[in-house]
Image 1 (cartoon, rainbow, N blue to C red):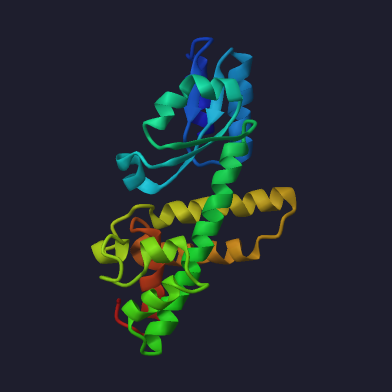
Image 2 (image 1 turned 135 degrees about the vertical axis):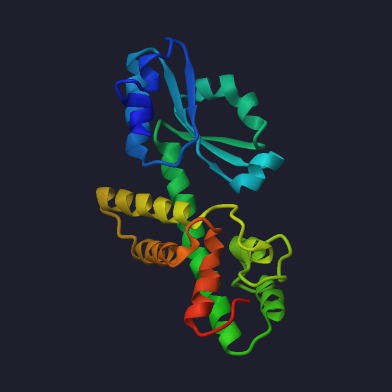
Length: 231
């Protein structure tokens, strides 16, 4: 992304003063701050505005958009962003949107790993996947990834597992985002052992040929490693 904005032929070399740039990439916060600073030097206002909600959320207009940068600039473009989702939230200065996206995806990536392990263990123990889902949905183990990405076909009809693991969010993207989170943790001296472990699981999943499938295919990977047929 740095080259796109800051390269010799990057966007900021041709953007007119007064332009508002809304960057919706998932990148490290330092990159967002660098682009914003370079834009400011040219009279260009930059917001980092990554999203949560996958491609389906973009189509349905249900995304959550976390925005870093000048609050008054956000108000000038809020109505445009609201077309993509009702939750357009100002979260701080430039870089804050990117940081919050990494925090959110850290939770999503780790929790999907837990759901994947849950199904691998339960299926190996002979449990019915529908009963697992029914009970855990009403128990302390319930979570977003269980409700939307249960890794067993037919348990959640709209889940990737029920649709050939067609990607709402690809494995390779989760691998990349958790790597950004680990790098941010290293820079800030924050230990993220679970994040690092989860990133390696997605690296393994990608190496096994699942990089362009939904990241919940990790459930199928763990089932295969347990000697099970894909549920």
